[in-house]
Length: 412
Ligand SMILES: *Cc1c(COP(=O)(O)O)cnc(C)c1O
Image 1 (cartoon, rainbow, N blue to C red):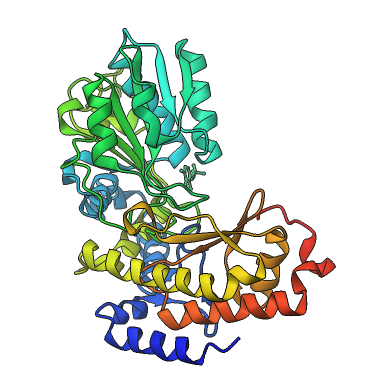
Image 2 (cartoon, protein in one colour):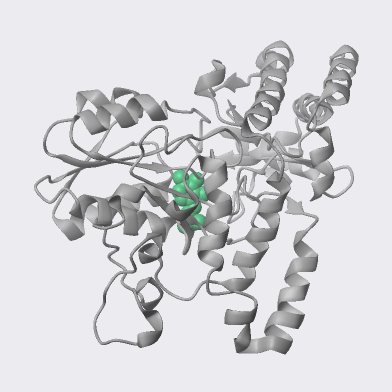
């Protein structure tokens, strides 16, 4: 397989790329082709110094006074405001708190309680397992029923018993993107509330929660937002719900007067009511520094770059990888795709392990998916060609069947 011409074209795309300089905002090991930013975003160069300062100065020297002097207390809202810009929400509609799983629990319970006469929760069958398990648990807790449906068919299950519909905007396995505006409108027509999980879309494509009239959203801090392992997640609640929404996790930091230490709970007036307990400050401030990597970027440009990368990969896959037994699982239409491309292959696990050994990092998703994420802030077009070249080399040498690569690790 000769990829010389493809490489020349990729080099030209990189040379013309208006966002090429953004790669310099990240610290990525030389020679590594990192295609897993959809699972753990790369390290922004600004983060280590901030974390060092927070540990040594704020924690080490200023200790508890940091809650005031370094404004730790307001950090969840401040960082929430930064996230809000990326997802098309108002700054006072987003707060950073807890993990995606916990935030989803809070939001599903809270949303369901806003529709007390309705007993059905609608989710998708293929969503990330945490979302499925949490929805089942919420239904059990509230005595509700769960209906699972492909988001594209949501209209077939909407009736006046549906309280809440909760979907991921981009499917973590296939990379399929759903129509946020259309689905949200249909859900509202049926009198239900809409929750979107933005874990695989925020930071990779423009999101217009406000324009789509979305009720609630949650999302992950450590994927395309690059907040670092275990970075806190975020909750968006539309302003119109602030007066009535009640989080089921009534921790003291969501209280109207946390330092009055009152004997009973009264929710804070705004989005702060979705907070629960003390935030993980080191992670939260690392996320804040990481979000600086988006400074000055338009999400439309970010999306254009993402599409350019995935289009190139799809074209090369058709030409070079399809004959080797790889099947594209990700939709071809640009507006139906997030920022990853997933390929089905019977020996997908071995392929991924052999690629990692070659310095091309993607991941495996059960049962047979090679998942490659093209994080639009730092992946280059030439790396798309590199990745294809390595896949070809793996298959030609049969590396994917090597015993070293077929034994599954704990984390796939
Ligand atoms: C990554 C991801 C999560 C992660 O949840 P954690 O609480 O951080 O483990 C949840 N839902 C979806 C859809 C995700 O993509």
